Image (cartoon, rainbow, N blue to C red):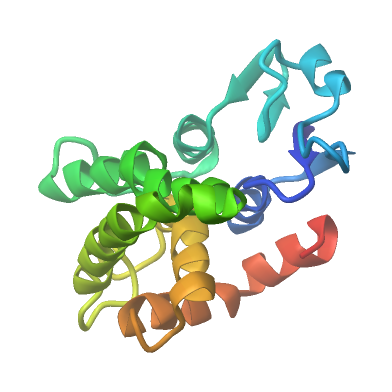
Length: 203
């Protein structure tokens, strides 16, 4: 059975949701952040030296990085679903969005989170950070005009990867700012597999 090493208030939900979509059994092993430092506990380093989450163990395979985990799960258990055929333009678009979620889109959102804790010391950075959020989230919103998903007409691993980005953007800016992203969030959160992942792993 696949193990998911899950840290509270992390991005592990994407992995439990992906596994629910794939119909795979899994076991959640939960860890709690230090309430003062907000860092992961040292116990997570027993599964991987970086002590980050999510991490999965599937037999002898131990994998970190959400994009790599999703790509592995879709390739191993997808049976041709949740990703376009390799060698197609749609596959190239899929890979682009799969890596964009953490490679580019999350950076301004994380900067916003960290600098907001600095109070006035972080104020000079806010205009540039807000501009980058608008740039990235605005582009994602434009990619969903008249579309439910980012690649093709059905859910792919790229949508799962981008879910955290979209949810963060809507929580921070509101549905009015990015209406297509808001519709995307409502669509994915209504999926039965997503609801099952929430029931098993917590909100």
